[in-house]
Length: 84
Image 1 (cartoon, helix red, strand yellow):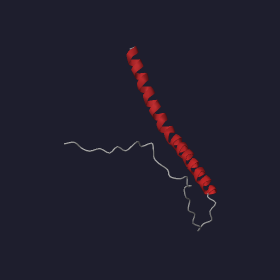
Image 2 (image 1 turned 45 degrees about the vertical axis):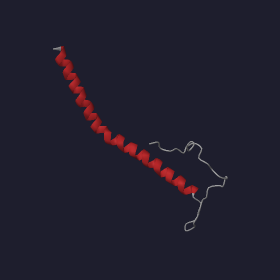
Image 3 (image 1 turned 90 degrees about the vertical axis):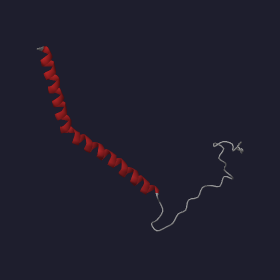
Image 4 (image 1 turned 60 degrees about the horizontal axis):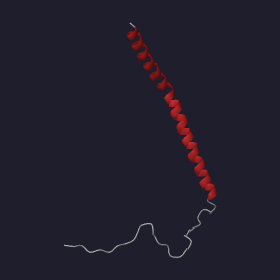
């Protein structure tokens, strides 16, 4: 009898949790989406404020000249010949 009672409690708890999740999931999802949207809007506003160029103007940003830059992290090139 205790086994059936435990099984009934587990099944009842499962359906209660399932109902509560269905009830609150849309609310929690909406809060998460609103939070992400506010963060994206804030980043967009910050980007707009940083851009102090008037509309219609063309700005060309160039890299500073630091002499010849070599890519030493790739390694050394070794020339080889194939043997037959």
